Length: 90
Image (cartoon, rainbow, N blue to C red; front, side, top):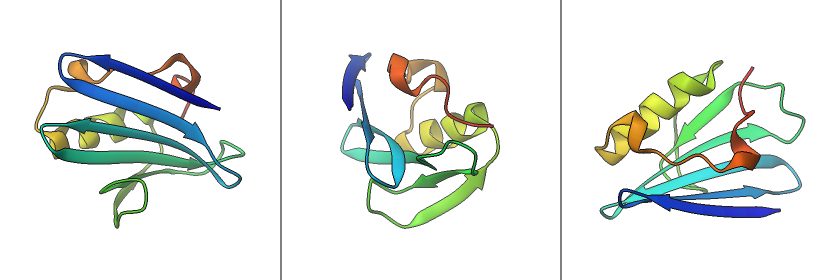
């Protein structure tokens, strides 16, 4: 499953792989990814891109989004979240 949305210059790509749920944001040449295991019960990882280095782990989706927005240099309210990704987090 893949879902892409865009708002205010920020693109959000949601994808489910065999192992993870992956939500990647890009804006202004910067990329931040929020990932969770496919079962949906592990902590969320914020990475510097889909295959990038892990920057931090969070229990809450809101905290992971806040960090992703910081990486992108945008306000957290500017991050479009595809419907398929809205239930990420614990």
